[in-house]
Amino acid sequence: MSETDEIITLVDRQNQVIGDIPRRLMNFQQDIHRVTFILVFTKQDTLLVQKRTDTKAFCPGYFGITTGGVVAKDESYDLCASRELEEELGVELTLAPQGMFFTEGEGFRIWGKVYTCQYDEALHGPLHLQAKEVSEVREMRIQDILENPHNLLFTPDSYDALLHYVEDKLQEYSNVP
Image 1 (cartoon, rainbow, N blue to C red):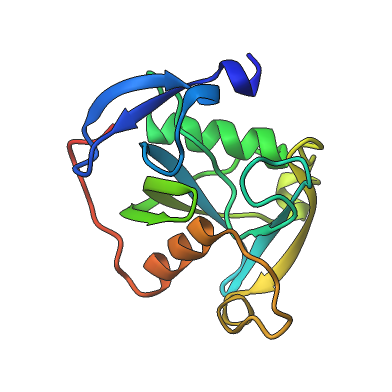
Image 2: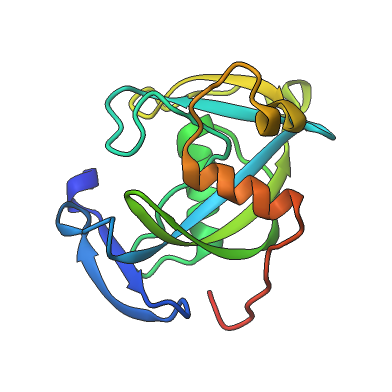
């Protein structure tokens, strides 16, 4: 299925399903949808950060602090997170759900679910980056991401996911798949 044929679940401010829509027809500024955010740790305070390709529709060339993506119709957050991790980085890792949050900004209105996992090349093998979405990965300390001494452009939704995680502001919702 191409990205333009993908059907996305729409939700309301309470994260309850209100319908679905083809991705190509979605108004990302107005429609609320679900997204997974996976913090891939290599050390206790170090994350794998992805540089997005210049062809991405949202924030091309920016650094995504998380792996993850949009939850498709009839897909759970957990299934989406596993799928996205394997698609983007080419690895299967054990994901630990951390909680959920709502965020919005220019070009996005999202109910996100944050996961963490641990990656070790010696244990899990090399990464296999999805060429159409990820141009490179690099390890970055969380403190360096937050302080951003090199003025890198981070995707605002993944930055917000990291802030919610670091500041312990993620919520648990038992009624959301």
